[in-house]
Length: 536
Ligand code: N01
Image (cartoon, rainbow, N blue to C red; front, side, top):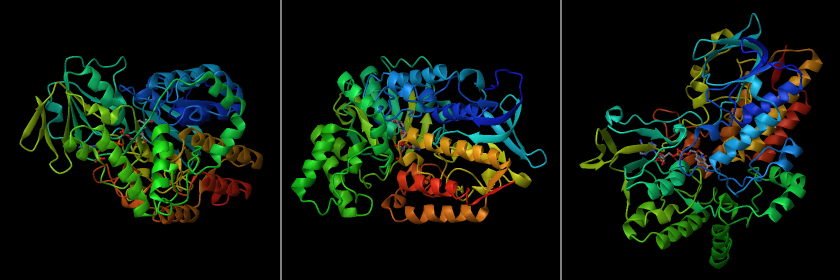
């Protein structure tokens, strides 16, 4: 095995952009093939999402015995998770352990944001340029840039004039922030807001939450993992992982029933209550028709609204917190004491759905006539999802084709894995793949394995240039859109559609046909000699 353990080296077989879970595993697999690889990472450590999102209360909301790598049975057996939903710190420690165990560190270059990537038809190579002007060249370039990594900071008028600190949840200072005795504003009530609000409320003197859209929040019921339960899972990992892979979201969520409408009210409420008590994202699998029947959807919505009305003591606040949009329209949130937090005396909820945040003044936040004076602002305002991280890089393919320009109206990628006019470039969990609708780590592993097999196939065939055909790509994009239109999810406002970003075209970006169907399609394409790709 060769490695790139030479900081002055600039020529590699493959460059990988990003050292999150995708980039780390890609490095491992490429090195296994004897490639010289350099991973280029903007952050100061491995872990991607779990390096950047250090806000108070940050933790995963997928059960971690399954939100973890499965490529190494030894790793899977030796690592000890402590909680059902571990904290960011524990997930980051896991990422560092993986980097230690597989000696990934020497091949990763940190603090190096990639700004440009250019294909040279003459040399048949990619040249990547980082923020300080360093250039590196390789035959293959793999974008492991993450689906939720490009931070969205809304252009609030006057934000730069605020007299106190402004922290985005996804760029939280290392070492944390002490809000003791302070008046804090949190803007945003998606997953990051839902997790951070209860923790900030415990520390701050006063917390004002600015909510534009109320979200559905299912209790996490986080707890320490019982050693007997862990042993049982570890003893049956292959079988349990296979079950998860065979399920729609790559998570093993037993489906309660085919139709919420067909079930009696009593049955339904029993099902919902049991899932509420168990906690977590499995609530979504209670019935199979939430996204095809408004009536079915409304039964789940109303169950959760009633829970909110039961928890939140002030009826006006409870009504504000009760979501109005379809259940599962936006990404479901999982929280700890989220609704309970609004019963605290030091917490105020401000509705900015109709009267929006007009401006940030040096002393606070102005909404219409009201000024909320605060000492610090937390932006829990999310990401330019799925395309943001790629479009931020100036990526140029054949004949200087610009990815930004080609994706101006909508992202287009074959299988969400590769892009016509961008030879020898792969994207991990790109738009048009199930990605964010699934358990991310199994999805990442499937993409990385597919790319690795494809590169091995190329070597065997004696070819070194691969590019998806424009026609195959268009057909895939049409299929992705067609099935998205069958789901009510495509009618909503959410980051899945880019509607959280001003001016971003509304396109449902992930593949909604489910993990098993997608994997089948990828495998069929590979088995048939990579149909839809041209090799040279
Ligand atoms: O971001 P979001 P996030 N004025 O986009 C509001 C994953 N994740 O960082 O809904 C006022 O969901 C915006 O309002 P609206 C997970 O997949 C996972 O919370 O657009 N408000 C919304 O309330 C998640 O879905 C974990 O009307 C403004 C909020 O900001 C994804 O990341 C933890 C505004 C943004 O919510 C993103 O979550 C965290 C404005 N101008 C994240 N602009 C776990 O594993 C935006 N908002 C637990």
